[in-house]
Amino acid sequence: MTINAQALNRATLARQLLLSRESLDVADAVRRVVALQAQQPASPYIALWNRLSAFDPADLDGALAGHRTVKATLMRLTLHAVHADDYRTFREAMEPTLRGSRLRDPRFTASGLTAEDATVLVPDLLEYADQARTPAELGGWLQARLGAPMESAAQRMLRQYAPLWHAPTGGPWSFQTRPSLVAARTRPVLADPDVADASLRILIRRYLEGFGPASVADIAQFALVQRARVKAAVNALADEFEQLEGPGGTVMYDIPGAPRPAEDTPAPPRLMAMWDSTLLAYADRSRVIPPAYRKHVTRMNGDVLPTLLVDGHVAGVWRAVDGGIEATAFHPLPDHVWEGLAAEAGSLIAFLAPRDPRAYGRYDHWWAKGLPGVDTRLLPGDAKDGA
Image 1 (cartoon, rainbow, N blue to C red):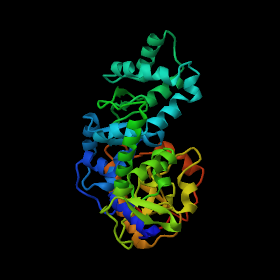
Image 2: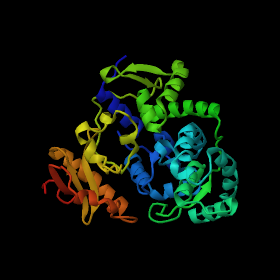
Image 3: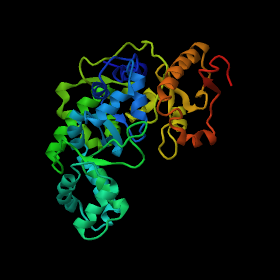
Image 4: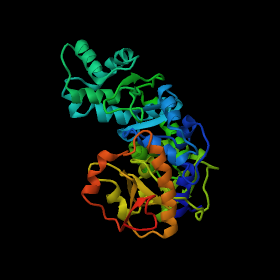
């Protein structure tokens, strides 16, 4: 069976709750979409606003405070919000990547410690972090344990490797710039290749539920796991997956019976969060981001700007400004699309107002450097009058 690029797009939108907003419990919604990239505190909130009807940000506050949804270093070596029930499996699947990238990093090895030393150290570190601790407190504990201070960069590598959750610290989006960390309540098994491989198979199933159909390269990119590991896991699961032929003859895998809407299914406009996982979950991101726009959206330092999604594809970027939402389109958009974007902008303005009306304001420098838009409008103020 073959599947074309447009059908892949609609499958992604359906599984990511972007074809229509749904009424779901917040933690259940996070589980449905698998993972929300979360290094920017506002992003999981805006991502869920895009996906849920009548989303109340206080519900996500509560899910994070109650550890039903947790924030931790996971896929792609960055912060994600995931359902607490998924955390242990995801962390075990990521163990070889995290162990290699963090404990063999020169910033860690400069401390004189080895990966084996960290294996011995981490359980006691987690015991100390049974309650929320600041990086300074963890650093003090390490100094006392090792008999000498550890460089901050080495500490950071160790913190990112250890199974620690980010504890809410307040602010408009539960987390402030300076983190507080607490030991994971469900402890993963570390440094066991068999456990890691078994957990990777589960992670792959979960990924396909939320982002499939997808190729081996897509799965490897989503998690930042070696393709050889992914290929071996997919081969082990061959009887459980449906195999499709994607664009260019690419072999794609999927969960039998998973949603694959017709390629002409209408896709409403959306104002996507920074680093929305939908934009980052594939090696071939053209199913959502036109190749010509990728460099405009993903900046040199890895920042992924908040985007306009039109007919399921990135068509521009947006930012919150005084007076509304400034939307910049990369190509001309018809009036009815601007009207749809204006309606979304009005809802987003109301959503942001009580907490952070200028969400993402610290990233305005990318606009100051110039973006290649053909039409910039202040929404909802002048949706019919291009500026």
